[in-house]
Image 1 (cartoon, rainbow, N blue to C red):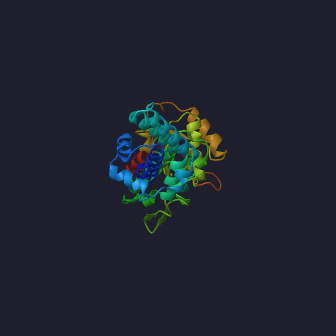
Image 2 (image 1 turned 90 degrees about the horizontal axis):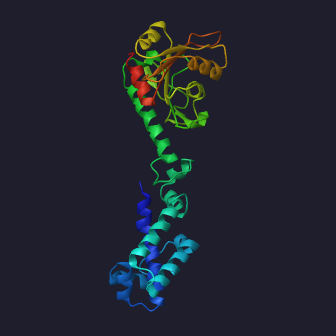
Image 3 (image 1 turned 135 degrees about the vertical axis):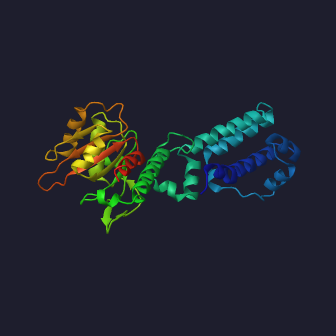
Length: 302
């Protein structure tokens, strides 16, 4: 694990300091004056001067870095720029280069998993796409642990399999929903998880969740379970429970059912169910604020 701050400290700043030290020396600064201007020791300046500090080629080659070094060096030499002002200028450039730019690229090289995330992100943005996606995946994993660690959950798995899902806040398609690839299945009384949660792998549960949200539900998490009248009755004691027509297209049927339901605003969870049709297995869906919340509701049935 390597943080972008480590890239800044280990690669960017030594290169920029070295470039500034060289620039100031060329402007006639003594080692002491360079040290004072940059807030470093004379021995550090000596190392920069003798090439004992490695420079990162991509940082050196970046025109914005070169322009900054020249501008700051000129300002320090002329007395127009104070060390504090120079620091601010460098900090501003660092923040710019962290925003999907040079430093973000160097960070991805050091942490290839970031590139694999396939999402635009800012590591300094608490609301970044990457952070939200990782939060959703973590919630799905917690939901899975809640269910798979519970003795008896396997009996609630439908013949077509169960899934644990959660969507992004602004979800529009199944690519915005994280779930288990291939669904959970009952293998000799144990719930088997075929793989790590990922986005875009649950067409069925994701469709129900997205349709419910389009109709006004605020839930982002969902778990589907085997339908039984007693299961739905138990859930109905605590949560709004709505039936939809399995013979209609799922998205339309769920949207109509949820749109006509009452009491959804203050509910901790929402239960949707259909009682089956020709070639369609009856299934119930528990929707809740997160996947972990939905899993806790389902666990209460065991």
